[in-house]
Length: 125
Image (tube, rainbow, N blue to C red; front, side, top):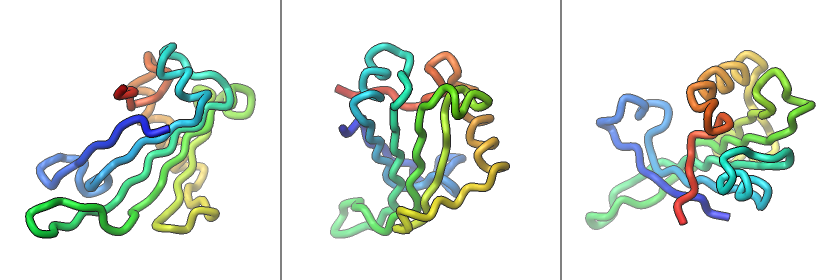
């Protein structure tokens, strides 16, 4: 299910890494988590980041930069708040690219939203 979309422009300090159009998707279990504020095991959240281009005065989607995926499994990922993290570059959707150190960095960043079960996004009905 589509959770929400957003646009990070060049004036944003995170533009170098996260500039572009963001689409957030969630499976049914994760949608339960958005409603409850705590995500059950089996939740999957997908962050799809696309470059942008201008076309006739409109900002439109361009090439995919990467897809980040979070999977909730409290036992398997106990050391990272119950969440597993992976990233897929461009359109290489079967070749995860994160090292163990990069997964730890994902978790470290997400600790800032520990009160929302380590999830940055909120569902936009």
